[in-house]
Amino acid sequence: MIICDTNCLISLVNADDQHHEEVRRLAAAQTRPLIVSPLVLAEFDYLVHKVVSNHAARRILSGLLQGGAFRLLPKDGGTRIGRSGNEEGPRESPPAGLSGPGQSRPE
Image 1 (cartoon, helix red, strand yellow):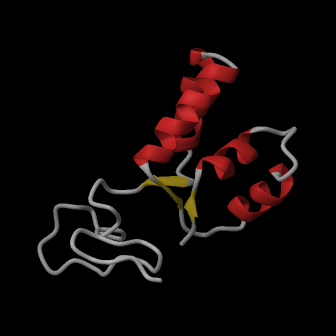
Image 2: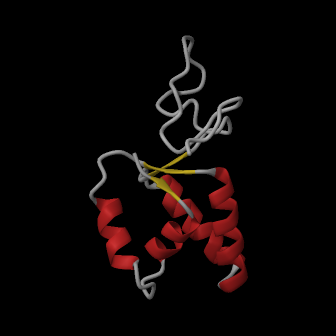
Image 3: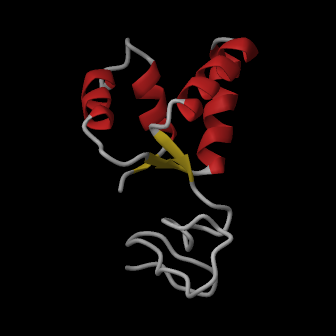
């Protein structure tokens, strides 16, 4: 599982970015959707809106999310990755590098 930050998204959609080809190849090689948090999408939307236009931001975001290559990180901080959110049973542990409510971050 790969969790994308704003820089990853910018590199992916900006052909002039120095990391574009590397990020594009990495994203294309994944068999599972890349994970994106709502906060990353908000920052990405703000930056594209500010630098390009509101229309471009909406078009790019729609394309990223509708293509199936990305999955939105749940609002609970990642403690439900791999679940639909409405299932019964114990929650999975957060992936390394993420912490859920009441859990400390690894040092």
